[in-house]
Image: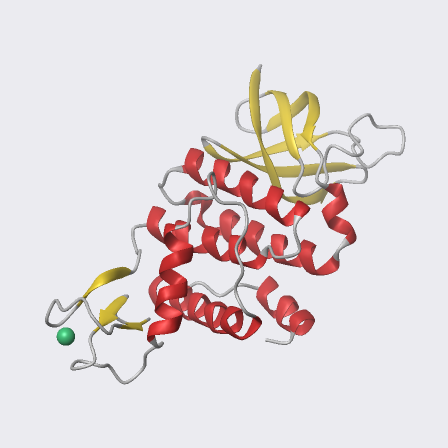
Length: 238
Ligand SMILES: [Zn+2]
């Protein structure tokens, strides 16, 4: 028997009454079959909710099967807000997609839990979602370079280029760029210490630019296009 803890990123139906959950643990992604979990009488009916932080005990090597399990943190209250839930689905999809890459899963899992907590308790949660997206760029080794102009090394009056993954001074401005204000916000989010600071305020117009920048960055550097993003776009309008 083996024990795992993690966040349920996704689940699929299996046969008539069973489910397979995809659990993000500190070792990475595992899938676990839960017999009869869709039956009303199943003790695991609530355990399998997406976003729950759970502990599971499994048997079997190739196909892990649930022997026992419990909910450690129940995030089902988030499901009541369609917008919050959709944002977290977008994050789940992202973490799931890159879970097969070699990176620091323990670090990402711990950050993911902190972000979900923020989403639960505050309505100003979008910057925290952005932080996770930026942190993942770092874990995947495609992090942006913020400090010096990529051409001359200047550290003043910088703008940000998605394609180059870095900054330029005003003597070397590229054809496509985000201005200094956007750059400063991105930097602030990138270096934000979620353990020390609780609150963060970013204006809606700026959030839209950040959203666009992150989407472009993932598309350009990782060829990643989110499916949930379309749903979110319909919901929030940008
Ligand atoms: Zn320069």
